[in-house]
Length: 403
Ligand SMILES: [Zn+2]
Image (cartoon, rainbow, N blue to C red; front, side, top):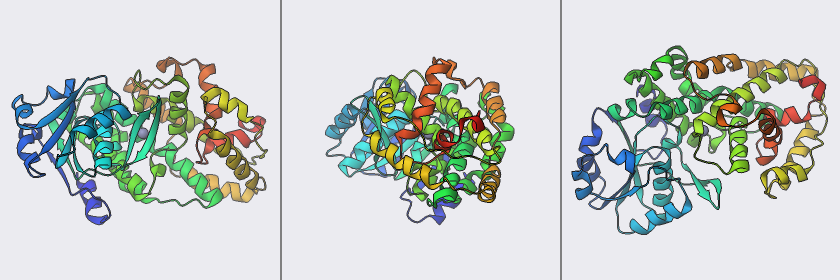
């Protein structure tokens, strides 16, 4: 993890003290935990707990949650009630266990140690926790783990579906950067190139060697893990999720708001579908020579009807003001903007080819969505968040220009 360690040395504000990468680390989990206090509390799910020696559960106080658990506020509260007297909490698992421990330990003012068990997403090294509240997934400010321990055997042998989901979550770098840069160039929104510079070399290797992920190549799965950890830290550096979540994540969250289904597909599987949509949309819009801007005619009623949530009224109003601001964009300005954004784009067909090669769900129908249902959500997703992306441009460029 050469790149990751370099970044940790440079960034003093990052709280992670140690990232240890080694074979069979889980076999020494008890010895590792003793460094963080006498009273350690371990959380894992039923499936993942099988990877640990049974003696561990006699030595460390623990909570084993059902393998189909979600990171709900109820589970967070359950963990909080059990860690009152603990020194540190250990998250042994992937996304769900990590989110539960991250948020519970943050609210209780305790340290947490992360033992990721799959390269499945970038949240191990981000300071936010995704938690389900009253049927809706919400992102809460939390904290970073004090240390991360990566058992190379466990990561390489994780269920393939999890690893591939992590790959898709990382590969949306291109659509994220295009959206973020667009809002910077149009409105001067603060933009930071560093998160993308840090992962550049890893991304190039993954673009060449992604097929090895399906063969569980330890080397390539670990490169992906490193890329995901850096992507998580990128969000810390950017003081928000700007560098890892833009239009493609907005569509994915909008889909979840409609179905309230958080378990039938993995986060990265939704992102594979939505990143392809965003990449196609970005290509189409960037190919327009003289965009004609017209204010959106979207009625807020449609947004409320679709997502059942009235808090978007304010966001829609803000978006309409922003759309007005770009009405006078000149041909020269647009040429400059599109030229800069195109420099970092990955073609949509390249993303699609990689996801096809790896059999990652990448079309709405792969997730059980009809084209019609999906298009409706894509068209309205821009109104769900105050981030200005190509989804907004699609809504205010004259239809004949886009289609
Ligand atoms: Zn993501």
